[in-house]
Structures are given as C-alpha cells and as structure tokens.
Image (cartoon, rainbow, N blue to C red):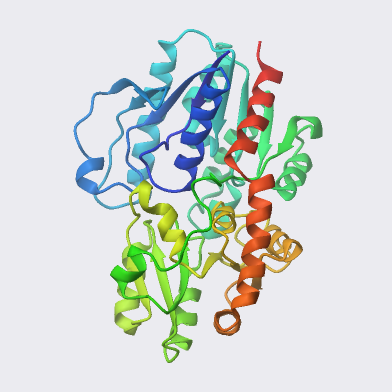
Length: 407
C-alpha cells in the first residue's frame, strides 16, 4: 500500500509532533507499506543559521527508510503572525505542487490545523488522489480565538470553514481525547467517522533512566528536586504561573525549575526570569534529539501547563512523554478538564488549578519531600504510557485505519 503523510513538521524539527510522525512513518514502513512524507524543510526549533540555509524549492530524499519530499519555506529570524502566514502559505503551495507530480496514493494521513495543510488536503479530495485521515491535535480556530491570536470574526469563520471542510472531506477523523470526539459530533461530524487515539511517545526511547546524569552534573543540579517543563514556550501554556510559583519557592534551595524549549514567548520569558532574579530557573533551548531521553531522566517531576479555559478538552503531548519517563506529572490545568481527569484517574501525578501559583508551589514542595510517593506516581504513568500511548500502539492503530479506507 502506498501511503502519504502530509505535515509541515518532521524530524529533525524539534518538539513532540515531528517526533511522533517521524516514528510513525518509519513504523508504517516496517509494517510493509511504501511511505512518502511531504514536509517543510527543517525549520521548527532549529538553530536560525541552519533553518535559514539555502534549499531547493522541492527536495526528494530517503531518511531512515522513508521517502521524504521537503518544500522550501521562509524562516524568519523572529516569529510573528505575518511571517508564520508566509511560512504556511509557502508550504501549502509547494506541497500541493509536489503532490501534483505524484501518482495517486492508496491512503493518506494529514495533520491539523487545516490552514497549514489546506493545499494538499484540497488536492487529495478534488482530484481524488487518495482517501485520507485527518489527525486533530487541537480544536481550531477555537484555541486561537481563546488566546486572542485571531480576533477578527471574518478570519475566525474562515478558519472554522477550513476545519469543517476537512472533517467532511476526509474518510475519517482521529482525535486525541474523548472530549474532542464529543465536540466534533456536536459540530455535525458522524460519530462513526471519529476515532480516539491519544498522542504517543516512543516508550523504548523515553524510559526511566538514572537521574544523576551528565546534564544534571553540567547544570549543577545534583541533589536538587528538578521540575522539568519541556516543549513549546507559547501563549497557551501560561508559564507566567510557573515563574510566580518559582518566586514563591525561591527560598527553598532544594527545588529547581528546568525549562527546555523554544517558542513565541521564549524571549519574554527569559527577560522576566532575569528581571525577577529567579536563580532557581534554568532555561535551555531544545536539545539534540539523542539527548532528549536524558533531559527527561534529569527531572524528578514534569510539569504540564495551560492557561485557564484555553483548551480544557486537550491533553498536551508532553503529558505522555513525562509518563513514559517514569516521572510524576504535575498538571496545572483546568479543573475537571481532560488532562486533569486523566492524571487524577491514573494516579500518575498531582493536579492544581490553572493559573494558581500558590497551589502549584505548595504541591511541588509536598512532592519534593516524598520519594516513595514520587515513585508510585511515576510507575502509574509509565504503565499507562506503555499500554495505551506508545509509538507501537499508535502505529498499529493508524495502520489499521489506513487499511480500512484504502482503495
């Protein structure tokens, strides 16, 4: 079976989405399928000089047994809405052009938001190049509107129509939580069309490892209780709450916060840390892929954060990475939202209300002094990740769904 995956983000781009689809493409190949990925050139979480290197408009290479077609996209020195629109437009146009050069596929997988993949999605449907699945990681334009990133009603309606068109035209929709499934059903999507599959982690790669590793030693954190935030430093995470909690804990020399990632708000976060003189916070850029298991291992707990009422239906992908590493999850999220419900039900961490810095600081102080409790929480998360949110489980599930829609 000839399978197409269309996503702007693919390794060596940093973050959970590229890693998930890089692994998925390889696994589908191991399951006997001929896989082609149409992605943008490496640009997300990359060093600026590397991301802005000169590339052909469209390149065609083989990477780890997967054929990868990459499109040139403009990579600005600083993120902005206009510049992101240029990047998205370039990917859509060139991905559509690349797809026109291809023979029809048996099945395809496309990732949301629709605005980032509108070109290939439209062609697949219009020219009947392949039946396709639409993977929904978050509800758009809902999250953009809640964050104030998009405010004009006309733009919000246009983005909503693009998402709805993908729901209609795809042969199936894969969502990350039951609450997303219910939200789409309420929007008119056929219940039989929607499958729930959580985001996933490579549980062979991200696994419990010794804490006292080279990273800890290099950062001078041996003997500290290290709280890791890893991932996108953007508008939806509400990391100002983490800074406020760190300020409350500044007199506790045993607790240290480690932030590893990039994003639109990283520069402002760094400036705020420096202006508050928060010596108990270390900020690092995304680390090389081969070092990521040791970043998680260096932590005693991993933190998941969302601003209040931004996306209560969502469980951020980093949740499963923390669980896979065998560390407790500290979730500063909406009470009774999807992430709160999962962490509470599994007993794999602690939940505090989004935006409540005082409760977050108190929870971390309590957790830091109870090593048996940390171990129980971490073991519960690890067990769930291996059984339900692993790369191997996701590959088999998506493979079966692709087989079911293939022509």
